Amino acid sequence: MVEKHLRLPAVIDATGLSRSTIYDKMKDGTFPRPVNLSKRAIAWPESIIGQWLSSRVQRAA
Image (cartoon, rainbow, N blue to C red; front, top):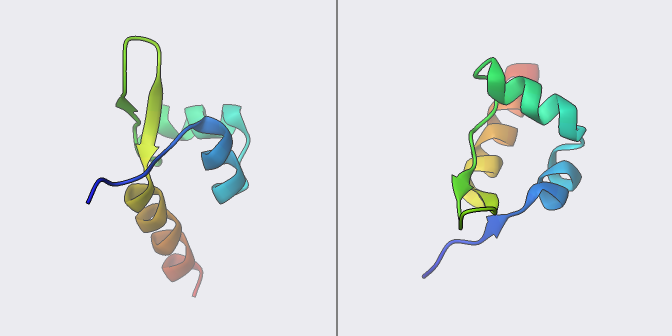
């Protein structure tokens, strides 16, 4: 089964983070990097975003 990939608007909705915060966190290594879908398109695997969110919840608990 093919995994779903999330484009930036969906990642923003899923995480509640702004575009600039996502890119800042990617720069400092605290947010997953996207994969290239084509020359001008990127997306994040849905499972990677889910894992990142789960790790944030576990740290808060």
